[in-house]
Image (cartoon, rainbow, N blue to C red; front, side, top):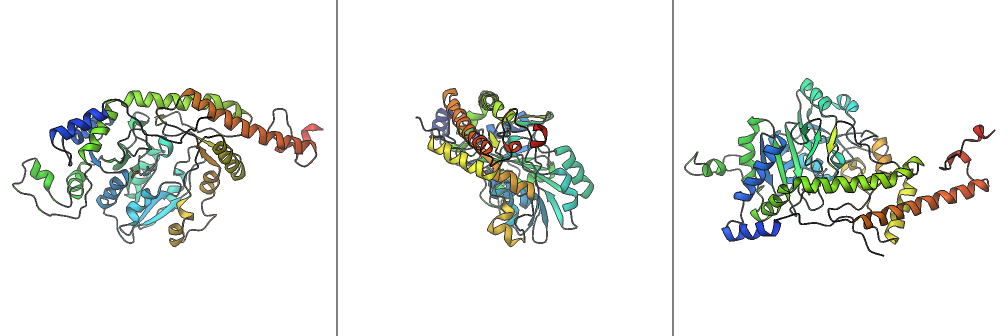
Amino acid sequence: MTTIPFNTPFIAGKELYYIAQAVTLGNIGGDGQFTRKCSRLLEERFNIRKVLLTPSCTAALEMAAMLCGLGPEDEVIVPSFTFVSTVNAFVRVGAKPVFVDIRPDTLNIDDSLIEEAITPNTKAIWPVHYAGVGCEMDRIMTIAEKHGLLVVEDAAQGVNAFHDSRALGSIGHLGAYSFHETKNYICGEGGALCINRPEFVERAEIIRDKGTNRQKFLRGEVDKYTWVDLGSSYVPSEICSAYLYAQLEMVDTIAERRRQIHEFYRQRLEPLEAKEMLRLPHIPEDCRGGHHMFYVLLPDVATRDGLLAYLRSRGVHAVFHYVPLHSSPMGKKYGYRDGDLPVTEELSGRLLRLPFYHSITEQEQMQVVQAVGECLQRKNAQRVQRQLAGDVPRCLVNVPGAACPEHDR
Ligand SMILES: *Cc1c(COP(=O)(O)O)cnc(C)c1O
């Protein structure tokens, strides 16, 4: 029995060669040729006004919060079903999260609940493209425009993913990408800030470079650089950018590999979905690319936890995902309670992510699929047996032909 990890980093092409080149050229600090090449490639390919590489998506989101001018008293509308960095980015400058429930189909922020969450203190909407599947961005942008709000896309999982013909990260006023080793295109730790509003560019460059106008100096626009604003150290090392550039050169190959992995799971698991033993991810017609992960939704928490344990016993490292932020100790400090966001709470408890990485083989995927099938069929068989013994109403048994008692008569 081989052990199948949940994720493992990979080399797609010239990563090591480019790192050696960066070292040989004598520039492993920030903003050398590889960082510039990555920015340009992302700008051109995804039609983004300005892309600034950062050491992480977390850093890019922090920059976005600063650029939006968020502070105490300000409110930001955000899903609770997300990674901590989405929210910490603005909480650390004093703004308050206003958590909105998710849509049961895509697990993205429920756009129909956004308007009722707006108050006079609302400054921004902060959607997250879960699994690289786009939020309802047209509707979100319309709401934002109507109420004069800024939109920051957390597109950590949505690099090279599209909503209609627009790249995720290119639609809101600002967007953030992640190149963490668990994401689709990687460099260890890395990220990017996508700037779609020209008036943010100059200040973003200053914030990124310790609050100085060093970028202007490097372009020869000023004769020395100095401290002009708030800032931090948000420039990545050339070593990371060199790795990333090799990945971005192979963006189509990597995307195709992920599409195949996704498709393999989908096809092999469809029979279980047809028997209502699990639910597969929903991808709306107008969403393309993404393929950040493959999750399944089980009928209840007990089945999810049972499946997780069974897969571990078969060497398969599946994992669950976010514990909703509103039910965390920090979320409770903001006055949230369990039960506030029913869809988020229910779906997060039923979700399981399957191993998904560039180098996973069909054989390994088959091992995952078989283990999932064994566990769920066995559980179902137990229910059928109990039902035959009269313990479980027949309508609760997921077998073809099983009908409700009324229909039996
Ligand atoms: C991974 C992730 C982040 C954080 O990315 P880092 O590059 O690790 O900082 C933020 N938001 C979401 C939705 C993520 O999936």
